[in-house]
Length: 438
Image (cartoon, rainbow, N blue to C red; front, side, top):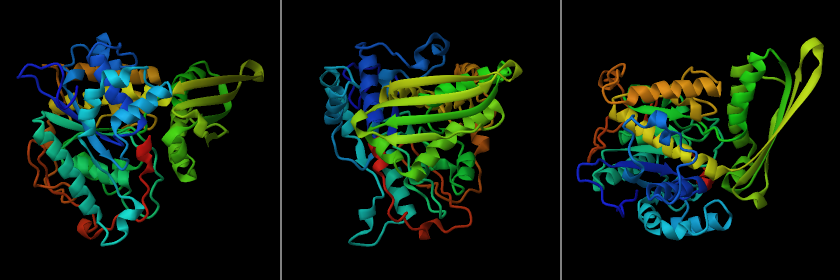
């Protein structure tokens, strides 16, 4: 599972890269350590849907074949980060020592991220194009040096506010770099990324599979089950209010009202899609630093029954955010890698099971989303009918952000931001990449 696996693989076994944005954060560290632990047989794959029988014949990359790297603005080494998580009860005691070699190997593959406010001091600012070039080159170099069959870029940084001036936020720069490096992209956050108006059409024209956004791990997971229950039983929901208490990097990032608004948009979409309308009530997010990586989500639901009888349902969810998210990140990386291998491209709406605000027009009910995911798994099997030809869907006329100078199996195309001279664009002033602390 590392850049230099402790257990040798057959020479013909392909290896796949997982390039994490926010690679030194809690979610990324938990995913890397957990992958090593499961691959070595130290722990069962609890929470990994792709390790259940329905996915056994899909040809997914094995956990031992995954090679990790990524971008981050933080400099805390992964082994130290893992020790901190073990002290907080996120990782099992002793696991950081057991997978130390894998953590060190992954840490060697982490490259500096950005932009940060200080990046504009003491010299000319990098343009958007400069940042994308650097990030894409890092990914292509990673793929080439390890002779990988491919790589998937997964954004696990904490939430950033949505841009209000049309500029590309850091999440969109990383996403554009993934396209340029010819890599499938997964946005596990509610940040803008490929949803930016300048990138959305380019993503669809790239011939690459992509998925997102905002991983569904707790409160919204429950909503995607309870919402359909109320609708199917013809119970009228009058109000649905909630509170999230969380700490860590995610709590700090979501203390920003604009970032919290981006997060809550996905929660509201689930209710709108399952109930037909958004009921009264809001979700309040409070940063409680002492909680660390743990969170508590409380929902208060008021609904009418027969003859107008007013009733209430309350739920409390207490969980470890990183332990809930990490297995889903591994699932998504494997599914996206296999989708690329099978020639699929465009938005992977069938992966809506994993997201609050999924791409495409799929169902919002968790049960229906799981059924779609299983059908998608069937398409990934060797010999199964895969609709469309990824090569035919590559748009010949795209002319921004996709660079034609790729190498080492991560080749590219050249593209441009529609109606904008990408090479004249400026980096987002004052962009704060603290989200990589997730």
